[in-house]
Length: 168
Image: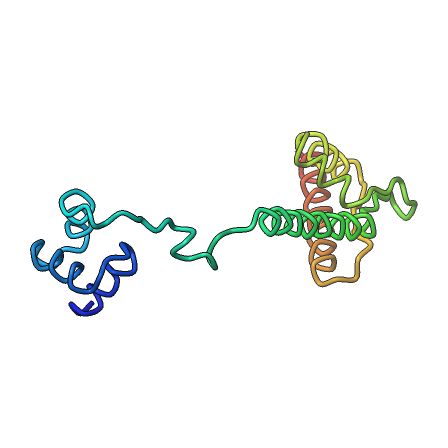
C-alpha cells in the first residue's frame, strides 16, 4: 500500500483531515496501527471510530438469510435421504432355497441391520450359504449385476467347502 493510500485509509477510519492523518503516520514511521492509537490517545482529534457495520454494511449478515440458508441445507439433506431410502426400498434382496423363493428384504432394511446389528445379517448370510440358500438383488443396475455374480460365486465356494468337509 502506498503512503497516499495509507493516509486515505486512516482518514476514512478516523474522520480526521488529510494533514492530521499524514502527520500521525509520519510520527509513527508509517505504521497504521500506531498512528491510529496515537490519534486516539494524544491528539484528541480522533473522536469517532467507525464500527465494522459502518465500515462495510454490505457484508453484514442478515439473521433471516442465515436461518433460511440453514433451512435450505436441511431440506436438501432430507430430500437426499428420502431419495436414498426410496431407492433402497425399490431394491430387494431375495433369498431362495433351490428354485423356491424363501424370503425377500428391502436393501434399506438390510443396510440398517448391517449398521446396527452387523452380526445378524452376516451370520444369516453365512448360515444361508452353507444350508443351500441363494441370495440375489432384484436390480438391473451394474452394481446389482456385480453383487449377484459375487453372491453366486460365494454360493459355489460354500458348496465346495461343504463337499470338502464331507470328504474328510
